[in-house]
Image (tube, rainbow, N blue to C red; front, side, top):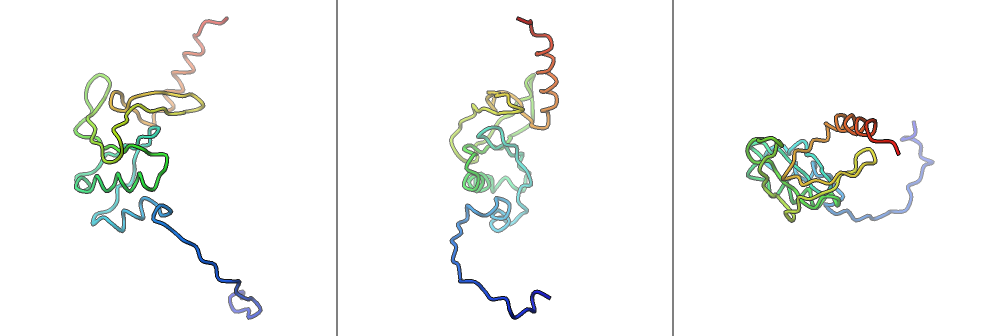
Length: 144
């Protein structure tokens, strides 16, 4: 048994410094919140979008700040307010953390898509439909 082998010597002591930014978003929130942490968010370029449950609402600003502090690619954190409505399936947003910068760029399958998260509906799970649309556009594009 390796653990019982007396011939193994311990190496020199090594000190490392950890900050909270090296801990996961979920772990930090599990230590701070009196309710389970939100399980998911959608990242749309530099914007993170939550659909917070009612029991998370009192802690929304904390959730947003922790996410910004632990994920350097996220600048703005928002939560959906109310219901999806209208022709473009939009919804009102509450800024939980960061500047209200809603114009963003998403790169999907090598294609850059610029959008404003306050003006249009975005769902990563719909990437297959966007791929089909791009294939149709390419197929029907005039050949030079």
